[in-house]
Length: 435
Image (cartoon, rainbow, N blue to C red):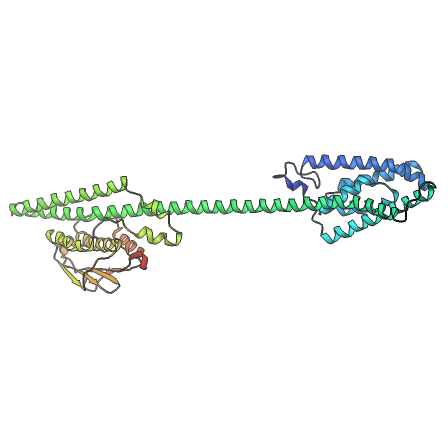
C-alpha cells in the first residue's frame, strides 16, 4: 500500500473500515474529487469523440471512468498518474493530473519513481501543447510569431502544470514526516517519563520499607536490652528479697534506673520521628546505586563505641560475669560505624541474658588499620539458669547482620565447640563510603 499518509496528519483515526481510508472527511474529499474529475473528463470526452469519430456516448463513458480513477489516489497514486499521462493526448483529466502528481509526491513512493512519472507527465503535456499550438499557428494566417513562441509556450505550460503540484506534494510529505517524527519522539519521551515515574515510585516504596525496617530495628535495640536487664534484675530481686533486703533495695533501684533510661531513649527516638527529617526523604534523593549504603547509615545522634564499657558495666550489675578487652589504639570512627558496633555488642549481650543466663561472657574490641572488629562470646550456662524465660522474636541476629552488611562489613555467628555462642563482626573504618 502506497498511501500518502494524509489520514495520519491528525492525532489519530476517528473511523476505520472504509477500505483504505481512516477518516470520514478523507472519504468525502476523495469521492468529491473523483466525481468532479469524472464530470470534467466526461464533458471533455464529447470533444474527444468528435475529433476521433467515436460515438459521443462512448467518449463520455470513457472520460467518466478515466476521471473516476482519482477515487483510488491514496491507495494507488502511481496508477492515477499513469492514467493521467495516458489521457493527456485526449486533452482530458486536467484535475486528475494535478491531484495525482500532488498525491504521488506526498506519498511514500520512492523519489526515483516520482521523478520518472513527473517527467512523463511533463513530456506528454509538452508534446500535446506543442502539437496543438503548432496547428493553431499554422491555421491562423494573420498571426505569425517567431520560431521560439510555440516551444517556449509549450514548455511553460508543461512546467506550470507539473512542477507546482509536485513541489507542494514534496513539501506536505516532508512536513508530515517531520510531524510523525516529532510525535514519535514525544511518545518516546512520555514513555521515558512514565518509566522514570515508576522508578521513582519504586524507589520511594523501597525507602519506606527500609525506613520501617530501620525503625523496627532501632526500637528492638533500645527496648530489648533494657527490658532484658530489668527482667533479670527483677528475678534477682525476687530471689534475694527474703534473704538480703539491702541487696534487694539496690536491685530495685537498678530496675528503676533502667526503666527510666529505656523511657528516655524511647522518648528521644519518638521525638526524632515526629520532628526530624525522615530517612525515606533522604534516601529518595540519591541514585539507586547508593541507596543500599544510605539506608544502612544511622542518624548522627546515637550511641558511640566508647559507651561499650558502660554497657558491659550494666550487664555486670545484672549479675553477668563479663570480661572486656580492647586491642589497638582507640580512635573515632564515622557515627554509623560506632553505632553499629555498639548495637552488635548490645544485642549479643541481650541474647546472653535471654538464653544463657549465668554464663561467663567475653567482649573483645580490636582497632586495626582500616577496620574495627568486635566479638562477644559466652560459655555454657548452668543447667538451672539456661534460659531467663524472656520472649524472643528471632530478629536479633538478623538485625545485627543487616546492620553490618549494610556498611560493607563481615558478620559471623554460631555455637562454639565449648557449648557456648559467639558473635563476631568486622566493620570498615570508612563506613558505607568505603565498602
